[in-house]
Image (cartoon, rainbow over all chains, first blue to last red):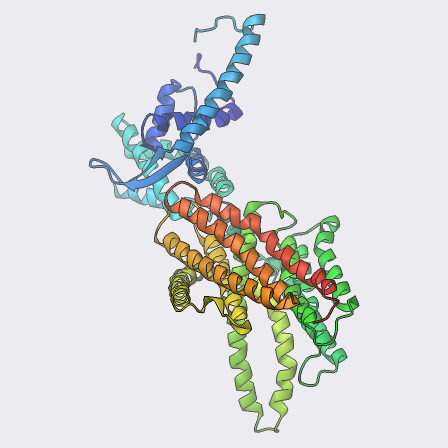
Amino acid sequence: MGGRIHIDKDLVAASATPLVLAILDEGESYGYAILKRVRELSGGELEWTDGMLYPLLHRLHRLGYVTTDWRIPPEGRRRKYYAITEEGRAALAEQKRQWAAVTRALNDIWTRFDLVPAAGEV
Amino acid sequence: MDVLESRIAEWRAYVGRSRTVAEPDIDELETHLRDQMADLQAGGLTGDEAFLVAVKRMGDIDGLSREFALEHSDRLWKQLVLPSKSESDSGRNSNGLIEALLFAVAAAITIQIALRGDGWSGDPSPWFARNVSLFVLPFLAWYFAQRRKLPLRQSLPTAAPFVLGALVMNLYPFDPESSTEMLAALHLPVALWFAVGYAYVGGEWRSHERRMDFVRFSGEWFIYYVLIALGGGVLMGLTLAILEPVRAGLGESVIEWVIPSGAAGAVIVAAWLVGAKQSVVENMAPVLTMVFTPLFALMLTGSALTYAVTGLGSEFDREQLAVFDALLIVVLGLVLYGLSARESSQRAGFMDVVQLVAVAAALVLDMMVLASMLARIGDLGFTPNRVAALGLNLVLLVNLLGAAWLSLRLLTGRATFDRLARWQTRYLPVFGLWAAGVVIVLPPLFAFGS
């Protein structure tokens, strides 16, 4: 089964909010499609338990980062659509800054001590 | 295909078993499950296989409902107070009925002792009226401290207000029949109710969610208390009718015994009912707010308009002021209770508009009352009654202003419901502190007289 990185649970949890917000920033979407997009973006390495997406979406809704709407698309079944709000975009921007700072710090130290043997390669 | 449908239905029922996952959430999860299954079947799996994989990917339901519970603590609360379905058969006293009855009996006996000591002859003495809440509410606080297993150190903040209240009520040299005495007696139960609240939330008084639970509890407690009082009224009426032929006056003397004890015991029984019979009120509470919020909104708007047009706004007399204060308090209670019963994820809708109308009309009335009160004070000077009324109206005014502003923003989509709810829970201590101030600070200011 080689080659697949197992990403730590805490890391998955921490990255969930910016990831979902970023996906919604691309356009409104519903739960299952968001999850497919996450798999696609991470090449299947970010493994989510499907159900856990929903409590997260509800939290984003409570915080006012997304709006929701039940709709029946012409070709499919009744779904709850989520769309990002201005506040959600602001939160996303803030998250981006934080993640950039973290990755910058990690990259700095890792390249200095050369702990990553082949950076840029998977 | 029918087998598959029934399996999905079973899965649905299994998810729904946890009270923290609401019906629309299950719908959403089911859509997800079906989408996933459709994709898997398109990839070549059979219906059964697809179902199994999709369910597995959904994750374990207990963990999921825990996550939902964390996000929707308003739902979690129902799980906490209710014995879970498996438990309910095994332990009948695990829901605290025996405990509640013990405390209720203790409160009833205390009231009787106080009445005997008072030498009751028809009307209760001022001493009894001053202290009545101190005979009952400590038992309620004690009951909750027991139920929440409050450690001793945390019990102190609950006990202290009762001790302080007892000291103030009995050591202050009130002039007989003075208005400071009457005001202190009226405000003490309110202040003590917040001490009960401290025990109710298990000491987590800083938490927004727990405070909302307490608001919800207070509203439901009130409903149960009224229901019990109604039933008790019927019972007393029949008792009178049945005992009267036996001996004239027998019915009355029985009732003189039963009513005070019943009224005291019901305080605790109602509190127990709120916890134990959650799902009953759950169906009733939203209906009650749905019915009464629009009616009060209409009534308030009507009276605000009438007073504005006829120009009577500046000449309220004293009785009218009291009536208006009572009305404003009822409206605030209704608004608060409506907030606590509302699903936070619901979008702004008709009920929010109605609530805004009610709050705005109440605001207008409150300002008229304030203006007239300031005029009275300007003419006649300060009295304890006027200070108490003025303070109450200011406290209400600030609350209503905040509520109206945030409702407006909610309706225009510029604030979340969460903001509005938090405004109200943050404001709660102000009511308690004001009531405590009227009990403790006001009497010395007016030399215990007027």
